[in-house]
Image (cartoon, rainbow, N blue to C red):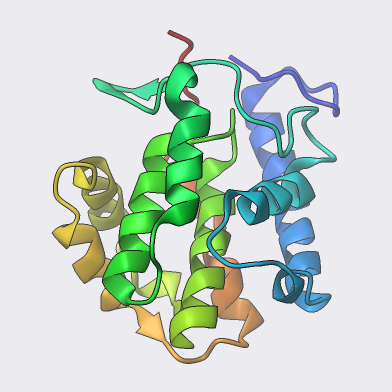
Length: 201
């Protein structure tokens, strides 16, 4: 299945390549122009702005709440009828410590507010919080992909694994563009847990 897109592409592989190229370029723009520095941390409004910036050239739904239910395997993300309430609750969650920030990240992943591109947007959102609150970011090159995907699958029930994995990858090199860009590296999201090609239920 290929999502309807502004590029007029019907081949999933072609869309994935163009989506990666464009979203990476837009992510660099976010970083280089200091756009993130002007946004409040830990809010859905900021995540929405990030998503819109990354994907507005590709999808009409960029920055908009999904209008379908999404699932991966046997796990269903927040049902549409509860999505707005879940996002309001996430906005209120504390973010003063590493544990609190990762708990907020896990809840945002469960909410999965967008039709596509949740993983990339939410990893930038996560680093934005960590940078502001702890003066740290995650060096995603130090995160094993399989360990990360498995830990994210289990995180709604047990978040100790994802906390351990991400804490071990923390760095204080918060102004490195290279480290920032690892969060949306192609290998982390293509066919990955956070941004799989979800089915409509």
